[in-house]
Each structure stands twice: as structure tokens, then as C-alpha cells.
Length: 432
Image 1: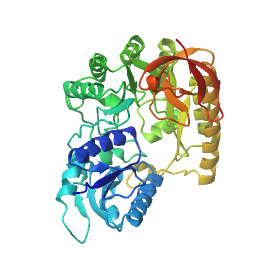
Image 2: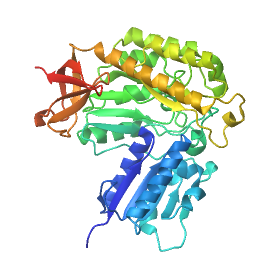
Image 3: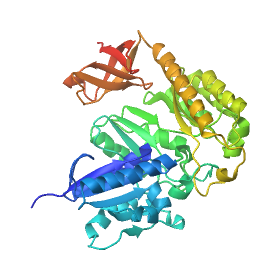
Image 4: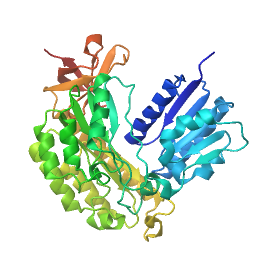
């Protein structure tokens, strides 16, 4: 009997990638063959995002494209868009199952149990049902794994629907997460990216602390690198920074969202820090880990953002020497307080400001990369052969390419950084 095929389509954050990978393992254990998203399939799983209207639209387009290419395939949609707008998704032609975030771990079972029917089945998409923790980590990439340690958010920022889509902040115990990290190590992966919705808020369920989780993970044999994917400025304590600086496994790489460099706009956003607090946290990192890569999220065009508030953001990003910017034009989300705020920003002005920050991001990243030309850094190499080249990342997240060498796959090597190409990648050579 021919095995059935399943494809996966993941939108949004690293957390979704870890969850998709875990769902995929369920299908593979059940005898399915995983195929690429573009290949013919019998089952298509879409793990959706809803951080912006663009993310919603992208999900709808993917569903329609899959159905056109695979008219007889079962289409199952889960994730944040499925949680927030389940009946809108269920109404799209071709959709068979819509599963909310609370039952995401049951997706494989629901597909297997599916019987012929005339309309899509919708499971567990009420906000008050979101109380389970779906433990997840990614596999398949021979080099790194995204490890989910926390889910949900209690912050309720004025522009955000994620607390509706993901529920309250929650987690499993440190011991359980360590066991998952040990499984990752046994599979041969050398790097773990610690992920969550509000990662630094770890411990709400179990009464434990994020710093204690980091210390426990630091002891897992076989894992040579840890990155913290994102952490709020008000949650990255001196203790966390000092520990990361002292540990050879926690690399000098931080992703710390800013959203706005104006304290007034941060207040309207209902963020839990000021611009000055952000400066102070980055200064502490620079003091103890001066080589750190700093990724920053920024929202452009939030209601009330005038030229001066935008320039406060621009100047702050220059001042802290951000290494890369993730720029989001403000997107009105139904049910959020930001919709009712006055002084909306014209889309043409937002577009201009996005362009200015994109130029700033390119300049800041180039400045950061140039600092390390001529130096030797440690690089963990990936397995893919790109026309005779292989890629990897330095500890401080510079993308490096060298001549392909099978013996260096999934190895941390000393590499001399030579020059920067037109794509921003660093041309290098292995030394020693």
C-alpha cells in the first residue's frame, strides 16, 4: 500500500516552526511521507500567523493555492489566525479542519479520524479554552533546533491580538524542558534557539524563573550553543545578562523588541518600559558582551507617531547600534485598543518611514559586520551545498560562507572573516 504524503506550511514566528516540526513527527510516526510544500500531497497542514492583516491574507492565499494544486487533499489549518477567525477560514473552499491553538497537538489524530463530510470541522477555537501547553521543538535541521519553553502572554499591548490567539502565559517545568533539550542533543544538533511568545515571562505556571531554566539548559551535554530568540526589555535582568556573559554556551546574540523609541508612544502602546530603560538594558549588554548582535523589532506609523516621535526611534536605534531591524508598519487588528486611538498616520507617511528604517538597518548591519573583518570567529556550519559553498553563523550571528567541505558539516570551526559580498554575507576561510 502506497504511503500517504503530507506537506507543511508555516507562517510567522520561530515558535510556529517548533510546533510544526513536532506535528510533522506525529505524521511521520504514523507512516506518512513528508513532502515539500510545492509537491503534490494528500494532506496539507498550515500553521498560521495573525500578527498583521498581511499575515492573514498570506494564509488565505496559501490555502487557495494548495486547493487548486491538490483538489482532493485534506487541508488542516491551525495557529493564531485559525484561533482568531476559525469560521472565516472554514468557509474557504478546500478547508477540512480548523484547529485552535489549544488542540494543536491533536492535529494528527483529527486528520486520521476525519470522515467524509460537507463542511469544515472546527475544533477548540474559543479564547477561554486556551489552557494547554503544547510541548514542541524543531527537528530536521541538522545544525539547530527551536525549543519552545513558554506560550501565551499576559501583557495585552494595545496593538496586539496574540494574547487572544495564544492565551495566558504558561509553561511546563524546567525538568521537562531539559529532557527535550537532551533529546535534541541525542539527535546530533549542536545549537538550540530558546523560543516562546513572551520567553522571559517563563515560570508563570510552575513558579520557576527564566534564569534557572537557562542555568539548567547550560548543563545539557552535547549542546554547544544557545540563543535566546526574543526577550522583552523589562524582563532581561542583570542576572540574565551576567549569566549569558559568563557562559561559553550562551552566545553574544540578543533579540530585544523596541517597537518605538518614544516613551510617549510606548505608553500608548501599553508597553512596560520606557525608552530610557531600553537604553540602560542595551548599555548593560554592551558593557559585558561588547560583541553582541542586537536584533530589534520596530513598529512604524502607530497612531500619534509624529515626525519627532519617529526621529526619537531613529536616533535611539543609531545610539544603541542595533545590528538588524525587523520593521513592521502598524496594522490595525480587530478588537485591539489601538483601533480607537486618534491621530492615525497616513499610509504614505508610514511607507516613507519604513524605507528610512530599512536604509538604516542596512547601514547598521554593514557597520557591525565590518567591525569583524580580519578577525577569527567560531562558525557552526550547515549541511546544504550551495553551488560549492556552505553557510553558517558566527556566535554573534554573522552569516558566513566558505567552500563546501563535508567534514565541516555541523561542526564549530575557527574561521577568518575576509570580506562582505553584495548580499551582506561574509566571505571567509577556515583556519586551523
